[in-house]
Length: 297
Image 1 (spheres, helix red, strand yellow):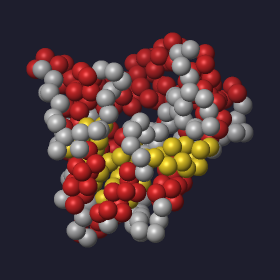
Image 2 (tube, helix red, strand yellow):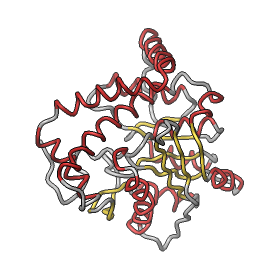
Image 3 (cartoon, rainbow, N blue to C red):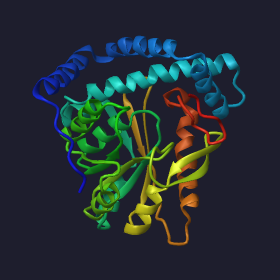
Image 4 (cartoon, rainbow, N blue to C red):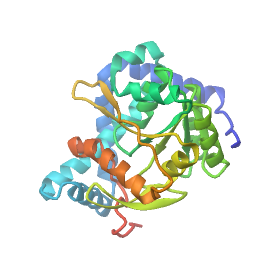
């Protein structure tokens, strides 16, 4: 099993708790601070990186103007910071309280899967809030396992993020430390693996058509589903205009041995991009999204 990261010390845990409680008190006013910080971070980006984000939005919707693409790029930075604030916001919230802040469609697919004797593979994209999605699932009693890489180059930030997720009873595996075996074992124990499929940093990958161009997707979900016989369930989790989150669990997809990884993940990509096209500013295309573009230094 993967080695545990050292737990953050008492003062850091207390600071995380205090930050979460402060955001709860602020309510939706927290977004004013998130917006200001997100726009400040956007302003500090190089012109090339700002243009890359705008260009990615134009790949998603080629009919928009350059001005609209830049507006969406700024919006993505703002929305990403809102999502980051909400990661802290939901940390100190009880399951009973968090239920007031979301709606869910497709939960029956989860119970049907567990009744079949296995867990499943939740697949998400870098869109909306994956941490709020996890909090919603956990609040409903759905056991989750996930895998994460380091947060930038910071071991401390990685420890804090991993600890915050484990604090909510999520099993967190660290990439490269027996994570693959851990994901398989989790599904066989009727848990649900939660995987961000697009733009993987490590592991096997396949090229799919996604959001207007060729994008690398992790082949991990296809492999886990094939080995365990458990289904893949695509998940969207985004914030509505009323501030509440909406989580959609799509119908299960069972992988056969004849299905190639590319075929499986292309089907996943087609499902996940539908919601991204509806609300594009909750998509976070900051870097090298498409395989046919050059990487920025």
